[in-house]
Amino acid sequence: MTYTKIDWNDLYIKVFLSSFYVQDGIAEFHATMELDEPYEKAEDQFRLLEKGVQRLMGIPELKDTVLVWKRFFVSDAINQSPFLMPSFGEAVSVIQQPPLNSGKASLLLYFVEKAQVSRIEDGSVVLQRPHYKHIYHTQLHERHGNVQEQTEKIFDTYIENLKNQSCTLERNCIRTWIFVQDVDVQYAGMVTARKDFFEREGLTQQTHYIASTGIEGRYIYPEVLMLMDTYAIGNIDPAQIKFLQAPTHLNPTYEYGVTFERGTSVDYGDRRHVFISGTASIDNEGEVVHPMDVRKQTERTMENIQALLSEAEVTMQQIAHMIVYLRDIADYAVVKDYMYHYYPDIPKVMVWAPVCRPGWLIEVECMAIKAISSPELAVF
Image 1 (cartoon, one colour):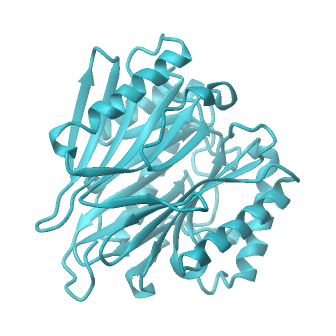
Image 2 (cartoon, one colour):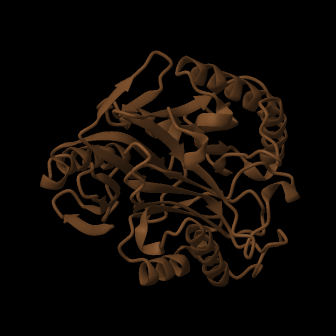
Protein backbone atom coordinates (compact mmCIF):
# COMPACT_ATOMS: atom_id res chain seq x y z
CA MET A 1 0.00 0.00 0.00
CA THR A 2 1.23 3.47 -0.90
CA TYR A 3 0.06 6.41 1.20
CA THR A 4 -0.04 10.04 0.09
CA LYS A 5 -1.10 13.20 1.90
CA ILE A 6 -2.38 16.16 -0.15
CA ASP A 7 -2.98 19.68 1.14
CA TRP A 8 -5.01 22.08 -0.99
CA ASN A 9 -4.68 25.29 0.94
CA ASP A 10 -6.85 27.28 -1.46
CA LEU A 11 -9.75 24.92 -0.69
CA TYR A 12 -8.83 24.41 3.00
CA ILE A 13 -8.88 20.70 2.22
CA LYS A 14 -6.70 17.84 3.42
CA VAL A 15 -6.72 14.50 1.58
CA PHE A 16 -5.23 11.19 2.66
CA LEU A 17 -4.94 8.72 -0.22
CA SER A 18 -4.08 5.02 -0.17
CA SER A 19 -3.08 3.41 -3.46
CA PHE A 20 -3.00 -0.32 -4.14
CA TYR A 21 -1.12 -1.49 -7.23
CA VAL A 22 -0.59 -5.02 -8.45
CA GLN A 23 1.48 -6.18 -11.38
CA ASP A 24 -0.63 -6.63 -14.53
CA GLY A 25 -3.79 -5.79 -12.58
CA ILE A 26 -6.02 -2.81 -11.95
CA ALA A 27 -5.33 -0.32 -9.17
CA GLU A 28 -7.61 0.65 -6.29
CA PHE A 29 -7.65 3.89 -4.33
CA HIS A 30 -9.23 4.93 -1.03
CA ALA A 31 -9.31 8.54 0.09
CA THR A 32 -10.54 10.60 3.01
CA MET A 33 -11.24 14.29 2.61
CA GLU A 34 -11.81 16.87 5.33
CA LEU A 35 -11.68 20.60 5.76
CA ASP A 36 -8.55 21.93 7.44
CA GLU A 37 -10.15 25.17 8.62
CA PRO A 38 -13.84 24.42 8.98
CA TYR A 39 -15.08 27.90 9.79
CA GLU A 40 -17.21 28.44 6.69
CA LYS A 41 -20.99 28.03 6.80
CA ALA A 42 -22.43 24.66 5.79
CA GLU A 43 -23.19 25.53 2.18
CA ASP A 44 -19.64 26.76 1.63
CA GLN A 45 -18.10 23.69 3.27
CA PHE A 46 -20.02 21.35 0.97
CA ARG A 47 -19.11 23.49 -2.03
CA LEU A 48 -15.42 23.23 -1.12
CA LEU A 49 -15.71 19.46 -0.73
CA GLU A 50 -17.34 19.20 -4.14
CA LYS A 51 -14.45 21.12 -5.66
CA GLY A 52 -12.06 18.87 -3.78
CA VAL A 53 -13.61 15.71 -5.23
CA GLN A 54 -13.45 17.13 -8.75
CA ARG A 55 -9.81 18.10 -8.27
CA LEU A 56 -8.93 14.72 -6.79
CA MET A 57 -10.48 12.95 -9.77
CA GLY A 58 -8.15 14.95 -11.99
CA ILE A 59 -4.82 14.04 -10.38
CA PRO A 60 -2.53 11.82 -12.50
CA GLU A 61 -2.87 8.77 -10.25
CA LEU A 62 -6.63 8.73 -10.74
CA LYS A 63 -6.86 9.68 -14.41
CA ASP A 64 -8.01 6.21 -15.53
CA THR A 65 -10.27 5.51 -12.56
CA VAL A 66 -13.97 5.69 -11.83
CA LEU A 67 -15.45 6.89 -8.55
CA VAL A 68 -17.35 3.87 -7.22
CA TRP A 69 -18.56 4.89 -3.78
CA LYS A 70 -18.55 7.82 -1.39
CA ARG A 71 -19.88 8.37 2.11
CA PHE A 72 -20.64 11.73 3.66
CA PHE A 73 -20.23 11.97 7.43
CA VAL A 74 -22.26 15.04 8.32
CA SER A 75 -23.10 16.99 11.46
CA ASP A 76 -26.76 17.77 10.67
CA ALA A 77 -28.23 15.58 7.96
CA ILE A 78 -31.69 17.16 7.87
CA ASN A 79 -30.49 20.73 7.37
CA GLN A 80 -27.43 19.92 5.25
CA SER A 81 -29.07 17.56 2.75
CA PRO A 82 -29.78 20.38 0.23
CA PHE A 83 -26.04 21.05 -0.02
CA LEU A 84 -24.97 17.52 -0.99
CA MET A 85 -22.95 17.46 -4.17
CA PRO A 86 -24.35 15.80 -7.28
CA SER A 87 -23.57 12.17 -8.00
CA PHE A 88 -21.24 11.14 -10.83
CA GLY A 89 -23.10 7.80 -10.96
CA GLU A 90 -21.34 6.36 -7.93
CA ALA A 91 -23.02 4.88 -4.85
CA VAL A 92 -23.66 7.65 -2.32
CA SER A 93 -24.12 7.24 1.41
CA VAL A 94 -25.09 10.06 3.77
CA ILE A 95 -24.98 9.51 7.52
CA GLN A 96 -25.24 11.90 10.42
CA GLN A 97 -22.10 11.10 12.37
CA PRO A 98 -20.49 14.47 13.07
CA PRO A 99 -16.80 14.70 12.13
CA LEU A 100 -14.67 15.31 15.19
CA ASN A 101 -12.37 17.84 13.52
CA SER A 102 -15.17 20.44 13.95
CA GLY A 103 -16.08 20.42 10.26
CA LYS A 104 -19.65 19.95 9.14
CA ALA A 105 -18.75 17.12 6.75
CA SER A 106 -16.00 14.66 5.89
CA LEU A 107 -15.80 12.23 2.97
CA LEU A 108 -14.64 8.68 2.37
CA LEU A 109 -14.13 7.80 -1.32
CA TYR A 110 -13.30 4.66 -3.30
CA PHE A 111 -11.92 4.61 -6.86
CA VAL A 112 -11.15 1.70 -9.19
CA GLU A 113 -9.05 1.79 -12.33
CA LYS A 114 -10.39 0.72 -15.74
CA ALA A 115 -13.88 -0.15 -14.57
CA GLN A 116 -17.49 0.64 -15.35
CA VAL A 117 -20.10 1.77 -12.88
CA SER A 118 -23.83 1.77 -13.57
CA ARG A 119 -26.94 2.55 -11.55
CA ILE A 120 -29.87 0.18 -11.90
CA GLU A 121 -33.59 0.66 -11.31
CA ASP A 122 -33.66 -0.31 -7.63
CA GLY A 123 -31.06 2.38 -6.88
CA SER A 124 -28.12 0.03 -6.45
CA VAL A 125 -24.78 0.71 -8.10
CA VAL A 126 -22.85 -2.04 -9.87
CA LEU A 127 -19.10 -2.00 -10.46
CA GLN A 128 -18.71 -4.36 -13.40
CA ARG A 129 -15.50 -6.27 -13.93
CA PRO A 130 -14.94 -9.07 -16.47
CA HIS A 131 -15.49 -11.86 -13.93
CA TYR A 132 -17.33 -10.27 -11.01
CA LYS A 133 -19.93 -7.62 -10.36
CA HIS A 134 -19.66 -5.63 -7.16
CA ILE A 135 -23.07 -4.50 -5.94
CA TYR A 136 -23.53 -1.52 -3.63
CA HIS A 137 -26.82 -0.62 -1.97
CA THR A 138 -26.87 2.58 0.06
CA GLN A 139 -29.46 4.45 2.10
CA LEU A 140 -31.83 1.48 2.44
CA HIS A 141 -34.49 2.79 4.80
CA GLU A 142 -38.13 2.68 5.84
CA ARG A 143 -40.05 5.67 7.18
CA HIS A 144 -42.87 3.89 9.03
CA GLY A 145 -43.06 1.59 12.03
CA ASN A 146 -40.82 0.83 14.99
CA VAL A 147 -37.19 -0.18 14.60
CA GLN A 148 -37.98 -3.89 14.35
CA GLU A 149 -40.57 -3.32 11.65
CA GLN A 150 -38.23 -1.02 9.75
CA THR A 151 -35.39 -3.57 9.97
CA GLU A 152 -37.61 -6.36 8.65
CA LYS A 153 -38.83 -4.28 5.72
CA ILE A 154 -35.33 -3.08 4.83
CA PHE A 155 -33.94 -6.62 4.76
CA ASP A 156 -36.95 -7.79 2.73
CA THR A 157 -36.25 -5.06 0.20
CA TYR A 158 -32.57 -5.96 0.10
CA ILE A 159 -33.34 -9.64 -0.52
CA GLU A 160 -35.52 -8.73 -3.50
CA ASN A 161 -32.82 -6.44 -4.88
CA LEU A 162 -30.26 -9.23 -4.59
CA LYS A 163 -32.59 -11.61 -6.41
CA ASN A 164 -32.71 -9.16 -9.28
CA GLN A 165 -28.93 -9.60 -9.55
CA SER A 166 -29.18 -13.43 -9.27
CA CYS A 167 -27.67 -13.20 -5.79
CA THR A 168 -28.62 -14.27 -2.27
CA LEU A 169 -27.89 -12.88 1.16
CA GLU A 170 -26.19 -16.09 2.29
CA ARG A 171 -23.97 -16.54 -0.75
CA ASN A 172 -23.16 -13.04 -1.97
CA CYS A 173 -23.49 -10.39 0.74
CA ILE A 174 -20.04 -9.55 2.12
CA ARG A 175 -20.55 -6.45 4.27
CA THR A 176 -23.30 -4.37 5.87
CA TRP A 177 -23.32 -1.07 7.73
CA ILE A 178 -26.33 -0.57 9.99
CA PHE A 179 -26.93 2.88 11.47
CA VAL A 180 -29.40 3.07 14.34
CA GLN A 181 -30.92 6.27 15.67
CA ASP A 182 -30.59 6.47 19.47
CA VAL A 183 -28.54 3.28 19.55
CA ASP A 184 -28.71 2.86 23.33
CA VAL A 185 -32.49 2.46 23.07
CA GLN A 186 -33.15 1.11 19.57
CA TYR A 187 -30.24 -1.29 19.00
CA ALA A 188 -31.86 -4.26 20.76
CA GLY A 189 -34.91 -4.10 18.49
CA MET A 190 -32.73 -4.07 15.38
CA VAL A 191 -30.70 -7.01 16.70
CA THR A 192 -33.84 -9.08 17.32
CA ALA A 193 -35.25 -8.38 13.86
CA ARG A 194 -31.93 -9.10 12.14
CA LYS A 195 -31.46 -12.36 14.01
CA ASP A 196 -34.96 -13.56 13.10
CA PHE A 197 -34.43 -12.58 9.48
CA PHE A 198 -31.06 -14.32 9.27
CA GLU A 199 -32.52 -17.54 10.67
CA ARG A 200 -35.25 -17.40 8.05
CA GLU A 201 -32.59 -17.03 5.34
CA GLY A 202 -30.41 -19.86 6.69
CA LEU A 203 -27.72 -17.74 8.38
CA THR A 204 -27.03 -19.26 11.80
CA GLN A 205 -24.09 -19.83 14.13
CA GLN A 206 -23.58 -23.18 12.38
CA THR A 207 -23.32 -21.52 8.95
CA HIS A 208 -22.08 -17.94 8.96
CA TYR A 209 -23.19 -14.35 9.39
CA ILE A 210 -22.05 -11.15 7.61
CA ALA A 211 -19.30 -8.69 8.50
CA SER A 212 -21.04 -5.60 9.84
CA THR A 213 -20.86 -2.35 11.74
CA GLY A 214 -23.92 -1.54 13.86
CA ILE A 215 -23.67 1.90 15.42
CA GLU A 216 -25.35 5.25 16.08
CA GLY A 217 -26.27 7.18 12.96
CA ARG A 218 -29.12 9.28 11.61
CA TYR A 219 -30.54 9.95 8.18
CA ILE A 220 -32.10 13.00 6.53
CA TYR A 221 -35.58 11.85 7.65
CA PRO A 222 -36.04 11.92 11.45
CA GLU A 223 -38.57 9.05 11.38
CA VAL A 224 -35.94 6.66 9.97
CA LEU A 225 -34.76 4.59 12.93
CA MET A 226 -32.52 2.20 11.00
CA LEU A 227 -30.49 2.84 7.84
CA MET A 228 -28.40 0.27 5.96
CA ASP A 229 -25.60 0.24 3.38
CA THR A 230 -24.46 -3.06 1.86
CA TYR A 231 -21.83 -4.61 -0.38
CA ALA A 232 -22.26 -7.88 -2.28
CA ILE A 233 -20.29 -9.68 -4.97
CA GLY A 234 -21.92 -11.48 -7.86
CA ASN A 235 -20.35 -14.62 -9.36
CA ILE A 236 -18.30 -15.23 -6.22
CA ASP A 237 -17.64 -18.81 -5.10
CA PRO A 238 -18.06 -19.54 -1.37
CA ALA A 239 -14.59 -21.10 -1.39
CA GLN A 240 -13.16 -17.61 -2.04
CA ILE A 241 -14.62 -16.30 1.23
CA LYS A 242 -13.16 -16.82 4.69
CA PHE A 243 -14.64 -15.66 7.97
CA LEU A 244 -12.21 -14.31 10.55
CA GLN A 245 -12.49 -15.06 14.27
CA ALA A 246 -9.22 -14.37 16.16
CA PRO A 247 -10.32 -16.58 19.09
CA THR A 248 -7.30 -15.62 21.20
CA HIS A 249 -8.71 -12.08 21.39
CA LEU A 250 -12.42 -12.20 20.56
CA ASN A 251 -15.42 -14.42 21.15
CA PRO A 252 -18.11 -15.39 18.61
CA THR A 253 -20.69 -12.61 18.48
CA TYR A 254 -23.63 -14.98 18.99
CA GLU A 255 -22.38 -15.59 22.54
CA TYR A 256 -23.71 -12.17 23.51
CA GLY A 257 -26.79 -12.27 21.35
CA VAL A 258 -25.77 -10.55 18.12
CA THR A 259 -25.29 -11.95 14.63
CA PHE A 260 -22.35 -10.66 12.62
CA GLU A 261 -18.90 -11.86 11.60
CA ARG A 262 -15.81 -10.24 13.12
CA GLY A 263 -14.25 -10.00 9.70
CA THR A 264 -14.38 -11.44 6.21
CA SER A 265 -11.67 -11.95 3.59
CA VAL A 266 -12.31 -12.44 -0.11
CA ASP A 267 -9.68 -13.91 -2.43
CA TYR A 268 -9.29 -13.11 -6.11
CA GLY A 269 -6.60 -14.33 -8.45
CA ASP A 270 -4.43 -11.28 -7.80
CA ARG A 271 -5.47 -9.82 -4.44
CA ARG A 272 -7.20 -10.37 -1.12
CA HIS A 273 -9.77 -7.95 0.26
CA VAL A 274 -10.26 -7.99 4.03
CA PHE A 275 -13.26 -6.34 5.69
CA ILE A 276 -13.01 -5.84 9.44
CA SER A 277 -16.29 -5.20 11.21
CA GLY A 278 -16.73 -2.53 13.82
CA THR A 279 -14.31 -3.69 16.52
CA ALA A 280 -14.08 -2.55 20.14
CA SER A 281 -12.14 -3.21 23.33
CA ILE A 282 -13.45 -6.71 24.04
CA ASP A 283 -11.87 -9.98 25.13
CA ASN A 284 -12.53 -13.57 24.11
CA GLU A 285 -15.18 -13.92 26.80
CA GLY A 286 -17.18 -11.01 25.46
CA GLU A 287 -16.26 -8.61 28.26
CA VAL A 288 -15.36 -4.95 27.93
CA VAL A 289 -11.63 -4.46 28.47
CA HIS A 290 -10.34 -1.31 30.24
CA PRO A 291 -13.64 0.32 31.26
CA MET A 292 -13.59 4.13 31.21
CA ASP A 293 -10.01 4.34 29.88
CA VAL A 294 -10.22 5.46 26.27
CA ARG A 295 -6.50 5.23 25.54
CA LYS A 296 -6.23 1.66 26.75
CA GLN A 297 -9.47 0.79 24.95
CA THR A 298 -7.96 2.21 21.78
CA GLU A 299 -4.86 0.08 22.23
CA ARG A 300 -6.92 -3.07 22.79
CA THR A 301 -9.21 -2.28 19.84
CA MET A 302 -6.25 -1.99 17.51
CA GLU A 303 -4.72 -5.16 18.97
CA ASN A 304 -7.97 -6.98 18.18
CA ILE A 305 -7.95 -5.64 14.62
CA GLN A 306 -4.36 -6.75 14.18
CA ALA A 307 -5.31 -10.25 15.36
CA LEU A 308 -8.15 -10.42 12.82
CA LEU A 309 -5.95 -9.17 9.99
CA SER A 310 -3.23 -11.65 10.93
CA GLU A 311 -5.70 -14.48 10.50
CA ALA A 312 -6.02 -13.34 6.88
CA GLU A 313 -2.20 -13.01 6.61
CA VAL A 314 -2.52 -9.25 6.29
CA THR A 315 -0.65 -6.55 8.21
CA MET A 316 -1.64 -3.14 9.55
CA GLN A 317 0.50 -1.61 6.78
CA GLN A 318 -1.96 -2.99 4.22
CA ILE A 319 -4.99 -1.13 5.57
CA ALA A 320 -6.65 0.99 2.89
CA HIS A 321 -8.83 3.06 5.22
CA MET A 322 -10.21 3.21 8.75
CA ILE A 323 -13.30 4.71 10.37
CA VAL A 324 -12.97 5.60 14.05
CA TYR A 325 -16.16 6.01 16.09
CA LEU A 326 -16.15 7.69 19.51
CA ARG A 327 -18.93 7.74 22.10
CA ASP A 328 -17.65 10.85 23.87
CA ILE A 329 -16.41 13.83 21.86
CA ALA A 330 -14.20 14.78 24.83
CA ASP A 331 -12.03 11.74 24.01
CA TYR A 332 -11.15 13.04 20.55
CA ALA A 333 -7.82 14.64 21.45
CA VAL A 334 -6.53 11.48 23.16
CA VAL A 335 -7.59 9.15 20.36
CA LYS A 336 -6.41 11.51 17.62
CA ASP A 337 -2.95 11.70 19.19
CA TYR A 338 -2.79 7.91 19.39
CA MET A 339 -4.01 7.30 15.84
CA TYR A 340 -1.78 9.87 14.20
CA HIS A 341 1.22 8.68 16.20
CA TYR A 342 0.88 4.98 15.31
CA TYR A 343 -1.03 5.17 12.01
CA PRO A 344 -0.21 8.61 10.61
CA ASP A 345 -0.57 7.81 6.91
CA ILE A 346 -3.65 5.59 6.75
CA PRO A 347 -6.74 7.44 5.46
CA LYS A 348 -9.08 7.71 8.41
CA VAL A 349 -12.29 9.43 9.38
CA MET A 350 -13.00 10.14 13.06
CA VAL A 351 -16.62 10.77 13.99
CA TRP A 352 -18.97 11.00 16.93
CA ALA A 353 -21.08 7.83 17.01
CA PRO A 354 -21.92 5.95 20.21
CA VAL A 355 -21.12 2.24 20.06
CA CYS A 356 -23.82 -0.36 20.66
CA ARG A 357 -22.67 -1.12 24.23
CA PRO A 358 -22.29 1.90 26.55
CA GLY A 359 -19.05 0.60 28.10
CA TRP A 360 -17.27 0.78 24.76
CA LEU A 361 -15.79 4.23 24.29
CA ILE A 362 -14.35 3.56 20.82
CA GLU A 363 -15.02 1.34 17.83
CA VAL A 364 -12.90 1.03 14.69
CA GLU A 365 -13.56 -0.62 11.34
CA CYS A 366 -11.21 -0.95 8.39
CA MET A 367 -10.64 -2.48 5.00
CA ALA A 368 -7.28 -3.89 3.84
CA ILE A 369 -5.89 -5.20 0.55
CA LYS A 370 -3.03 -7.63 -0.06
CA ALA A 371 -1.48 -8.80 -3.31
CA ILE A 372 -1.66 -12.59 -3.72
CA SER A 373 -1.25 -15.06 -6.55
CA SER A 374 -4.02 -17.65 -6.96
CA PRO A 375 -3.98 -18.62 -10.67
CA GLU A 376 -7.01 -20.89 -10.21
CA LEU A 377 -9.17 -17.82 -9.45
CA ALA A 378 -10.27 -15.02 -11.72
CA VAL A 379 -8.55 -11.72 -10.99
CA PHE A 380 -10.38 -8.80 -9.41
